[in-house]
Amino acid sequence: HPCQKRAATSSLARHRSPYTPHCTTGCAAEPCDRSAMARTSLLAALLPLCAALLATPTRQHRIKPTRAVVTYEVEEGGEARATPLSDDFDGAVQDAANGLLGAIQDGSLKLRLDFDTSMGDETYTKLKLSLEFARDVAIEWALAMEEDENLVLFFPDAGAAALARQEWKMDDLDEAEVPPNVRVKAFPRDRLDDDDRAVFALCPRAPERDVVEELVNTCEETLRPVALLNPYLVDMGTTGYGMAGRLFKERFVDALEPCYYLRTLEWGALARTYPRPYSVWRQCGLDEDVEGGYAFVKNFFSQPNDEVLEELFDEVYGTNTGGPTDEADGGGGNLFDGIGKFIDAFQKL
Image (cartoon, rainbow, N blue to C red):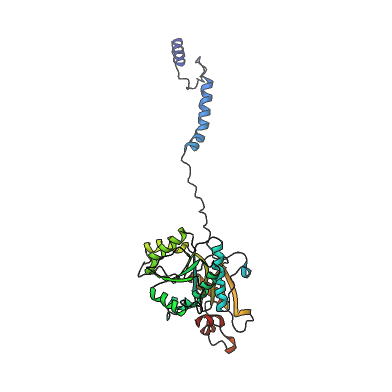
């Protein structure tokens, strides 16, 4: 009967899920909950947004920071800031003494001086080439001290110390070439006395490495200034260039304040006097009207290595030249076969 069908349909509508759409046929079914449908529509609209928020974030590729290029060059100052290049031996001694005493006055206790005019020639030892320079620097240093304070020169061995005492006539006060407050001692046996107030170690070698380090540490603890001239404390035969050698260099050698540096090159010179920077000078050709015969090239914050100097040579002279030439004779020879007055003066030592 039609009435029974409508009753059954009405009963089914009353038990219908709230999410089921109401009937559109015109029968007497109950309409669905409109708020439930609104919630359903809202959820459907928010689903994409929720999925985006909950998804794994896309990996972003950041641009790697560019490391600063380490440059040795001093940015400001130029030649006005450069270390002057003395054109004679006495001037070099005075520069070394000024750099040494200036560093001590500024509070440095561990210092080094490098005086290398050999240009790779190993005919004579570094001590032989440096002995006159060491004596004259020691004279300036001793004269700047009190009379009752001794400056001790430490030699690599007792034989070298005895020979210096004899050559400098130290046993005769009237004929002595050094002040009376200069003393000479030798590694490895000699020790400091109470009135020894400053130490000048001459050309210490790798075999003396341990006693030199002990001496320097003692001087630092007792507030005595100590300077090493031409130290050569790391080599393949004694210390090696492995981890032990590198650690010793970082611990000891790198802690020394370089108060004076002079190295002659085949095409010029590298110089440094505390507190000025390292300065590279090139020797000029005879056609160049430059006072002293040397022209300033570049300053460096720290000591440039051989590779940097080679690059600088190529930059100054070009890769196809062997250096400056003497154009007075047609450019046929290298000017540095006879390195000039400045280097000649040092080579005669």
